[in-house]
Image (cartoon, rainbow, N blue to C red; front, side, top):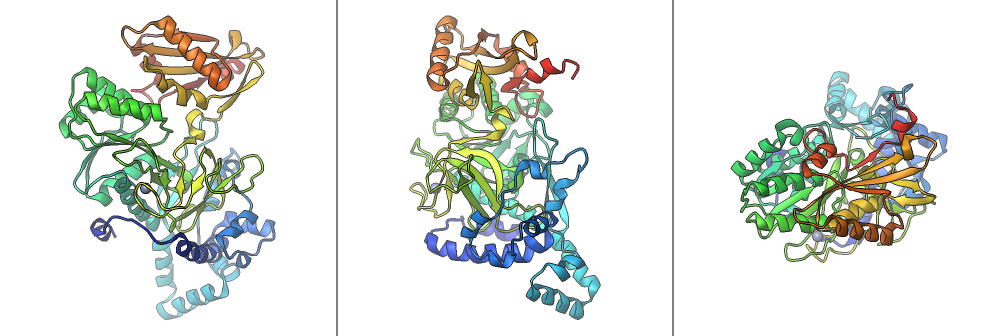
Amino acid sequence: MLEKLRAAPTWRPTRPWKEWEAERDLLFHRFINEQLYPFSPFYRRLFDAHKIKPSSIRRIDDLRHLPFTAKQDIAPTPDHPARALDLVLHPTEEAIRHAAPRALATRFLLERLRFGAAALERRLHLEYAPVHVTYTTGRSALPTQFLFASGDFERLHVVGKRLIELCGAKVGDRALNVFPFAPHLAFWQTFAVGQAMTMLIVHTGGGKVMGTAGNIAALERLQPVILIGVPGYVYHLLRQAHEQHIKIPHLKIIALGAERVPPALKARLSALCARMGAAEVVVHGVYGFTEAREAWGECVPPDADTSYGYHTYPDFDVFEIVDPATGETVGPGQRGEIVYTNLAGRGSCVLRYRTGDIADGGIVYDPCPGCGRIVPRISSSISRRSDVGEFKLTKIRGTLVDLNAFVQLMPEVPEVVEWQLVVRKHNSDPDDLDELALSIALRPGADAHAVKEQIASRLLAAIEVVPNEIEVLPLAQLEANLGLDTQLKETRIRDLRDVAKNPAG
Ligand SMILES: [Zn+2]
């Protein structure tokens, strides 16, 4: 598979959307009837409970009549630690006999008659047996496992090539991957990129494994064309490397995943790279989540500051954008929650999975003005659930505050080098009011008083709230508080309210 993939030309679909639609309706109908309903214990139960006949689902438009799957429907609980395994497609004898469409059951029967039961079993094992797993990274929920069968792991390579080509990578480019070594999608998606692109990637494991000094040494020795990692850590790494006067003249592409990348951070990274000898660096966001078992690249033309959104794969998945309050599907280009459905795949498959992520510009289907590809494009402005864990919205002095605003706003203040927000209880009293304490580290020579005022007025204008305290800290101390070198992901926003409730824990 890899050999063919490596030799394949760049994926650049330009068929009219109408053709995609007809093809996808057929794929969808077959996937529901021949895979999801018969072989997924979770979805067979769900369909039966709602008295939904799988054969009645003919077109992707019919999705809107099906129930959503939410994180809490599949996350492990102390009583059911393996609950998510019910999502894994598993063609048992019973499932084939009682739930598969007659034509499919007959095909299995003929295969058994012709080649024998053992051969059929072996064939099904090769197709369906899990070979890989990645986990969600919930703060409060237990991690949920998502399994890959062989074909799914191959698909990780197919999409890896598509997404890195979209970012402008060429065969033979060298890359530095500073995502942590972990059973998380971001690391393995990057691993597959290297395999599919015939590209040398040095996987350092990030700050926790080699320390920032080790990562800087790797950056200097490898002189990569592409740098891949979590936004906060990549910024930290480049800043430290710049302080040591490291030059990186070959760098052209920065691909950032696992968190949202506000435009101000992109600009900041490009400017930093320019000072390090790389004048034409383009920063791309990569969107992905464990439940989809793949990721999508952002189309940013090299000569433009615009973004044409995340390019999705119409042959592998279906995206819907819904009103988060009503669950109703919204029109193209309209803001709403991203809902994901597998159109292909084995292993852990989902139908109408509610990501909790909000796309400001929704999804559009017209040809991309940047690259000409005709694929569904998700707007690059996504408020990610993972940005701030489960406390995206919090009530401060009676006002509901969207803490995502900090992620967007803080990189816009040029004097602020690093920042961290702490949500805590006043006087550490669990019954008292919530408070916001903002720590910042400043550029040398910055006027602390003026910067504090600037931040306060920007926040007031954007979210009508001013932090109870803005404290200036030495950069090294703030970096330690953020855990840039010690944690898998920096703690940009820290919630201490549970600590007040339960000081022992
Ligand atoms: Zn494009």
